[in-house]
Structure formats: structure tokens, C-alpha cells
Amino acid sequence: MKEMKKTITKKPKGAVAEINDFSKYLGMKKRDLTIFEMLPEENEYRLRLKNSKLNRVEPWFIIDEDGGTHALTSLRSLNNLLDTIKKNQKEIFELRLEKAIYQQMPVDFNDAWTVAMDAVERIVSVTGVARTNVDLDRLLEDIKKEHPNLFIDMNMMMESLQNERL
Image (cartoon, rainbow, N blue to C red; front, side, top):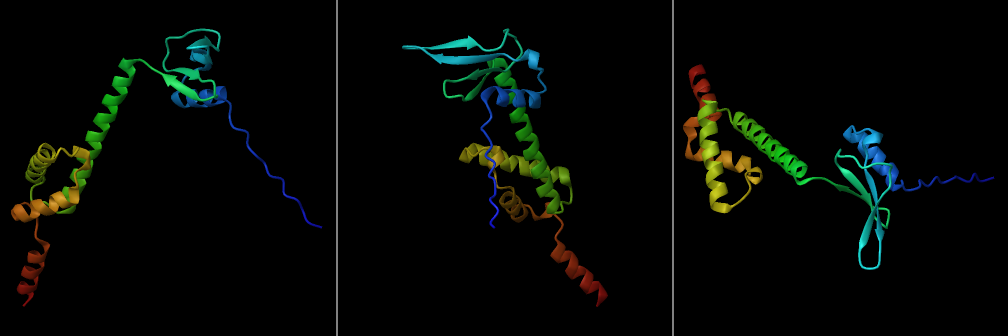
């Protein structure tokens, strides 16, 4: 006799459950949540407070007529978030550049860094490419060709070691 497998279909989470999960992720307390329900009217939408009180804790959440969830935040908070993202992008770029320089075995890291940053600024100003999108491998390859004295030449070092042995 064949066994029938039961298929378990997960019900999509309700909007309030999604908001509760997200607010936990943000570290918000349930009592600090502000949830609105968006209600379509004739030529406009009306927001109805879904939970018991209006809080100043951000973000506020809105549930639209289709059950979709949206977040509402102040421009100050959005600006702070964007500033943080920009700082993180800059830090990540600098760490990637540092790694790329060290992989090329610089004679003096600070000299190589200065030349690389000048080259990055030139590329950004000429091409308009975002700093984070500069191809660092290609950049360092070009710098090695233009300034070979900034990096240890392993081929030359190996040749000199072989010559010493002879």
C-alpha cells in the first residue's frame, strides 16, 4: 500500500507577525511599536492606528490594503542611516585597498598607499566611477608598471639567489 505524504503548506505570515519579527530584530519592545492600517477611501487613503498608542520610537509601521508592510521613519534617521552606510563603504574600500597593496609586497606600505590613493582620486575625477567600484587589481597592476620601485620584485630576488648559489 502506498503511503501518502502530507504536504505542509506554510501560511504566509500576517503583516503584524512580520512587524513583530522585524521589531525583535531591531531590538524594539512590543509596547513601543506604532502600527497603522492604510484604508482606501474614495479619493484618498486614511491611516488608522492599529495598536493602542502613538509612540515616538521609530520606525512606524504601515499595513496597506493588500497586507503589505511598510516602514516610516524621519529624515534625520534616514540621513543617519545613509551616513553610516557611506562610512562603512569607505572603510570596506580602504580595507580592500590595504589587502590589495599587501598582496603585491610593497617596500614601504605608506608610499604605496599614497600613490594608490592619488591614482584612485584621479580615476574617480576623470571617469566619475564611484571609489568603491575601482578595480583594485588593475589599479595596482598599473601602479607596479609605473612605479616598480614601490614593490619587491620576486623574480629579480629569485634570480639573484640563484646567481649567488652558482
